[in-house]
Image 1 (cartoon, rainbow, N blue to C red):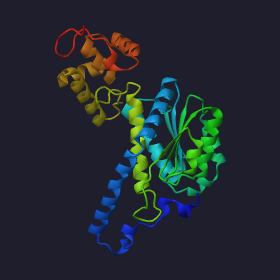
Image 2 (cartoon, rainbow, N blue to C red):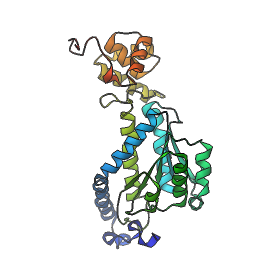
Image 3 (cartoon, one colour):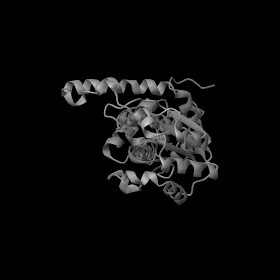
Image 4 (tube, rainbow, N blue to C red):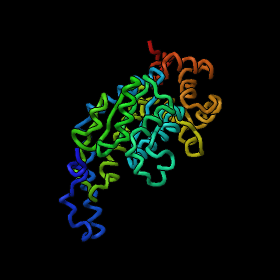
Length: 306
């Protein structure tokens, strides 16, 4: 589809006088436009669910989640990948973000790199793309050559593929097992897809990574039980998570956190079961990381689980 035909490239009738608006009027208009993003996403939840299922399957097979994109889309993929490491305690190799133009494109515009399709093949080959992986191609326009090339290459490897765009009948959808087309409509500032389209992509990426991590046992109740305590804030959060999950005092949480070698999930299971670190780790492994699937001698109320 030609660029001028895309809804993300159309002029927004609600902002034709953007340059004549007061700051307050601009803010109110942008806020009103942004409210339509969540609604647009609600219409493609079934597609997002299918994508999450593929990612969970990849993780369970020892595969990875790999985002590929250019410009804003690529930066959002890199951001989501980076934040999975401290949030869920995963290896940096488990969720990877690739952006057209490489690492330098995160900080300086390298938008021309998106037009060279074989760059994506090279980038995916360099990380040794495998059939167990899931590749998510990100392109607001739905027609970025870098993403199309990457998805096509992933198909030859046998990897699962997902296309995320902000236009209906997107070209990249033709190259993916699952297509997520969030139609966000014309931007407040014509063609500036870092706005509503970028917001939509960020929201969908939140769903993909968070729900997939829940699906492999990285969450207990609504708590980040595999969080990495890499600074004081996260250490405090880790101890509060232990308190909430195990219904214990801060003092006990601090003590067992250290005894568990600063592993939140292990500390929680140690308190709930009364086991030592090694035994708690064994229980977690047997339950594939799901705290809820562990057999406890006593529940929080003091009654037997039997």
